[in-house]
Length: 266
Image (cartoon, rainbow, N blue to C red; front, top):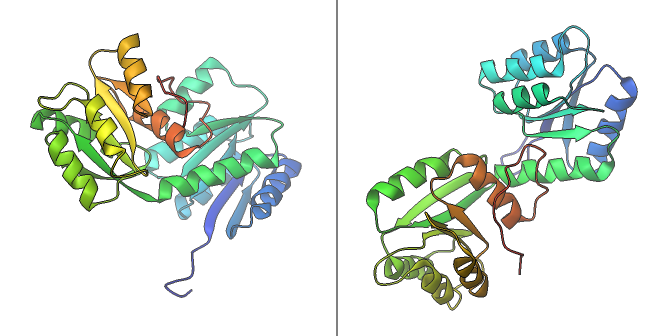
């Protein structure tokens, strides 16, 4: 394989139904991407495959012989694998959902599902493989350090740049292209609403996400007026960030996503 040739996306499909395995394989190939597909018809075989080789995406049936999909997900978690794991079944119990989230499953597909849903999974996987430059604006160095750690734990690959106030943020945006700007609402000299309004004059690419310990209808209206995409109420966590970024990037929200206050896309 040449250095410029994209590598194959390695996928494992684990389901005791040959029909389901073939359906997912065909749906993947129909997306036009280049896949290397491995099939496993029980949980034990799936774990053996996952322990021998690295996979980019795993489709895991919850109800399989030998080991269940939940147990396979637990093994992925123990191995420290970064496999993008999708669980599948015709039903999902609350206990299984809690375990799957704990073990790091990304999403759940309810059977039967269609080609379009498989395509959405692939598109999300591709989105999280990209690198996104983001600007973090807060007048507190301590808060910037804390928020930066949260952003680094996102499922998305974020390269974080910092600015200590609105003026510095504007200069950074003039010099660089940022996909996302996370800005504190309460800052001396220029608050987050004013910064979002001014940034519109320098870039149409950056999506502004406001951060604040307070949240009320007045702030919501002001944020929407200046084109902000969402409010993150402090303290927030990686799962909150992931939900916001799915919204910004136009991706399907996973079954396990948290509910976060977002504004209509403009």
